[in-house]
Image (cartoon, rainbow, N blue to C red):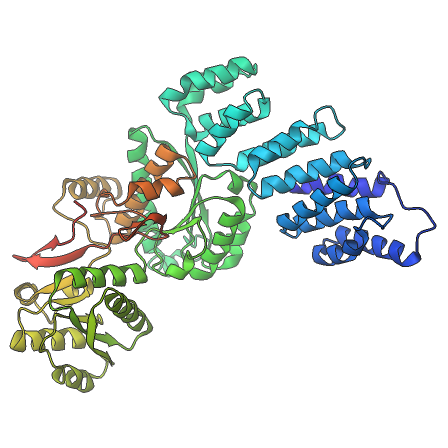
Length: 566
C-alpha cells in the first residue's frame, strides 16, 4: 500500500495536478521547489524536507504544494509526527486548496502510522465520493489487515459498524484464526448486513480451516553437505521435531497452527531474503532466528510490522530490550541471576554472601547481576573474588583463603570441575550446613557424586528443569520415541513447550497477546515448572523473557524444586 500510495503521489507530481506558482516568483524559490520534488522522487527524504521547509510559510506562493510534499517526505522518512504537524498547518492556512482531498488521504496514512486507527478511519470517511475514494478503501484495508490486536479491532467494529471494509477484514480475521464458537452470531450478522459470501465465511469448511500462521526461521542448512552439517544442526532438527509434535497436540485440542518453515542458514542474508517474502506480513507469530545478528534483523522487522517474535534459545536480555514485540523463550542470564539472588536473600541467614566467579565473560556477567541484586535487596557481600579455574593451584588458594565466619551462603559461578571440587571440599570440611548456590551443570561433573551434593546444602539454578517423574514428561517421551524412534533431547522439549505455550496464547488472545501475559502472571508449563512474562516484583510490567527460574535441590538423590509456582 505504501508503494501504491507513492505511485499515486508521483503521478500527482508528473501530471501537474497541483497549481504551479506564477512566473513572477523569485527564481531561487522556484529552484528550491524543483529541487525538493527531484529529491522526493529520488527517495532522499530528509534532503527533500529541508528544501520544502522554507517554502511552507504563508508568504510563499508555493506554500500548499510545499507543505503537502514536505509531509509526504516526512512520512516516507518515518517521521509521522512531523508529517502530522505540517498537514495541520496546511489545513489551517489553506483550507480551500484544490488538492485538499489528497492531503486528507495523506493525513489518514499518517494517523494509521501513529496507531490512531479511529481518527484515521474517520478522516477516510470524509473522502467518500471524492476522486481518491477508491484509493482510500485500499489504504484502509492495508492497515486493518496489519492490526492484530483483537480487542482494539472490536472497538473499531462497534464504532464503524456500517463500514463494510472494517467488517469484512474482521470477518477475514475470524476465519483466519480468531474464530471461537461464541463468534458465530457476530459473523452471521456481518455476512448478512454487508451481503458477504456466506460460503466463504459460514460454511463448515471455512470454520474448520481457521488457524494462526506461524513462521519458523531456523538454520537447518539444507543446502550444505549433510555429512558435514548433520551433527552441527541436530539441535535444530530436534527442536523442530518437538514443535511438530506440539502442533499435532494443539490440533487435537481445536487449536490450529499453520507452520511455515524457512531455512535461514546462519547469516543475515538468508533472514532478510525470507523477511522480504510477501506472506511474512500475514504471520501471527515468528519463531527464530536464533543467532544474534540474524535475530536483530528479525527484531527490526517485528517492530515495523507489529508481529511478535520469539527467540527460542537466547539468554541475552539485550536481544529483546526496548522492543515490545520480541520475547525470549528462556530466562535471560540477568533474570536467572536476579531470581537466584532474591531466593538466597529471602531464605538464607544471615544476609551475607561470599561470591566466587570464573574469569569467563559469561560467569563474570552472571556474578555481576547476582551481586547487584543481593546488595539491592539489602544484603552484604563479604567477598567477591574472581578465579581462573583452568589454573588448579591458584583456584585452590582462593578457596583456602576464604573466611566463612558469619556468612549466610556462598555462591560459585563456574561450571568447571576445579571450582566445583574446591567449593564442595571446603564446605564438607568447614561448613557442611552452609547453603551453596551454583549452576545445575555441577550435576554432570563426574568427579563429584550426587551423594556428596545431596549431603551438602547445594541449591542449583535450573532454568531448563523438567520433572521427569511427571505424567506430561512420560507421555511426551513415549510419543516422541514412537514417532521418531529415538529419545527426545533437551531441544525437543524446548520446541514442544515453546510452541504449545505461544500457540495457546494465540488461541486465547489473538496475535497481540502482550498485555494479557501481564495479567496471567506465572503459570505451570507442560514440562517446565513455571512460565510467564511478569516479574513477581513488577506485576504490572511486561518482561521480555521468562521470569520463572526453578531453584532445585537434591533430596534423597532426587531433584526437587524449592521455589514452586504453587
